[in-house]
Length: 54
Image (cartoon, rainbow, N blue to C red; front, side):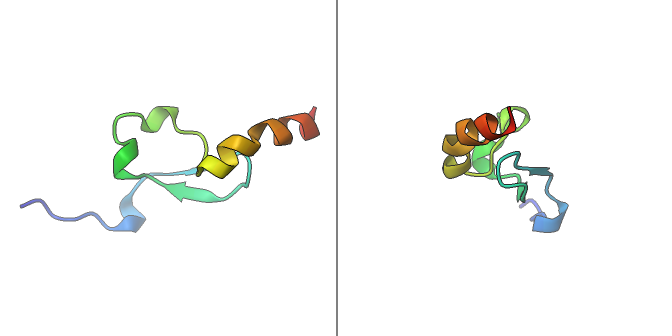
């Protein structure tokens, strides 16, 4: 049986919408390099943030 990894040992990224760090999840195992947003809510709000910046 494999040893469990501590949550603090998992890779993290910062969400460009809310600027909060988020941690790797099992469901993102195959697409971690493509993940940009911490949640569906932030993914849906990305257009509002883009319009405020531009």
